[in-house]
Length: 110
Image (cartoon, rainbow, N blue to C red; front, top):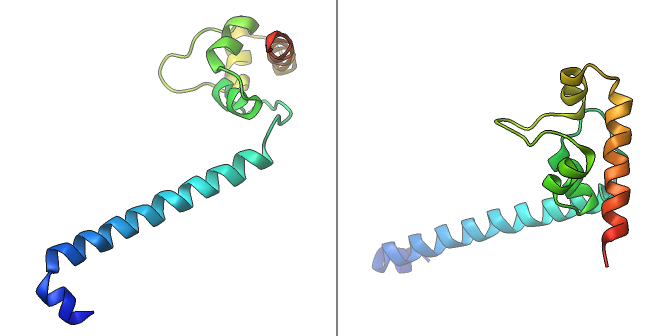
C-alpha cells in the first residue's frame, strides 16, 4: 500500500477522500432514516415547529401553516409554543388547530 501511495499520491489521496465522504453521507442517510421511521406521525407537542410536524406527518409544512391559519415563517423556525405566546392563547389551542389542519390535509390525499 505504501508503494502504491508513493507512486500515485494524488490518486490514493483522492480515493481515500472519496471513501471518507461516501462513509459520512451513508451514515448520515441511515441515521436520518432510522430517526424518521421512529418519529412517524408523532403526537404534536408544544416544542415542535411546523416544519418538524410536516416532516413527521409527511405533509408540506406551508400547507399546514395555511390550513391552520398560522403565519408563514420569517427568519428562524418558530415552535407552536412561540406561536401561542405571540397570539396570547393557550398552546393547546394551537396544537388543536395544527391537528385539525393535519386531519383535513390527510383527508384530501388520494
